Image (cartoon, rainbow, N blue to C red; front, side, top):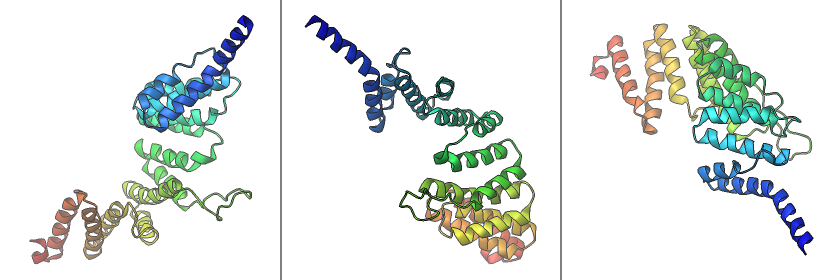
Length: 274
């Protein structure tokens, strides 16, 4: 019986790392971030490589969610460097880029996103962040071109074995591509290319009449039309932005209303300006 007891202890010890990972995942799913992190960190360095890698990647995810980006970055780097490669190596490289972006290290983040490799589930998010990195480092023209390319890209065809409709895409990816078109308009405006900014804003208006970024995109159109001297057209687009912002409870509508009054004054419509 002593031999059997020792064998049971060995089996229990061997199973413990995987059980800890599963417990941590359950805690994470329940929103108990601190407890999940503590449980992931209970997995020892001498645990089987698979379980140890899963625990490190899980800890990396939780640390990022807690805003502890430097620690999350260091943990993701450990997973990415594991030999042989862990099954989440690509996800870990993506996590490295996400943490660098969160730390506002945009040049390093851009290089890290480019090193992620094959990760279809995050392909749209990666392209979105690559455009954002250019925007946030001041290269508005390249950013605009990247945002527009993402907005115009057709969704990936689903695998033949799936039941998805052709060109189906996730809601998250669709939302990012919608935002990309709005940001393309803004970035082209910032780059001094009013013609392409207005073109993107008009395209957004047609595709996403009730979209999440109508107000921002209509403001871009209004700016371009003001630059062209089309004050009536600018007023119409700005009025649309103000109405959408007000309906959402966004206080930016007050600034829009003030600008509308100034436009009315410039047009000579003193009643509307008052």
